[in-house]
Image (cartoon, rainbow, N blue to C red; front, side, top):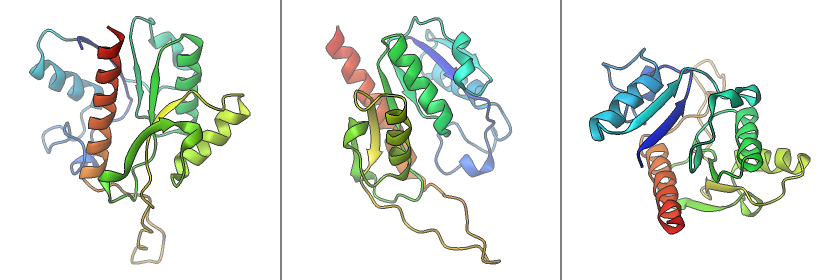
Length: 189
């Protein structure tokens, strides 16, 4: 794989240290797309990496030139996920969407399947409904976990904590997404 288009407006945060290979104490505060580009080029100096410090939203289509073979959705927002799926379908580009990894502890429970066959995952449930509302009932590949999410403990003040990710689960999800795309691209040759 020689060309990458990376879109993310986020910066590396200290909360990323436990689960993102690009997140180190030296990269905290740096734009994720810049750090990721540097990491890719350290592995393959001949790679072509275009970066966009932007959040992908429905109006972000101008970021793409349609010269790519696959879209990997690792976006946090449902709106952006839906826009990516619709964009991919309109341009006949294969897409795989990552569903939720928060509050999951068993990295062996990931499956790649059609969105219509998912269960257990709260994000997949929302995506199924929203896609159905758009007339898309199947034909969207997703990586999701069949593991039941744990219930996070409350903070000392009794307030519910936001969903969290343990170090190894998002990493496994990322490797599975990459592996899936590579296998699909090899079969297409």
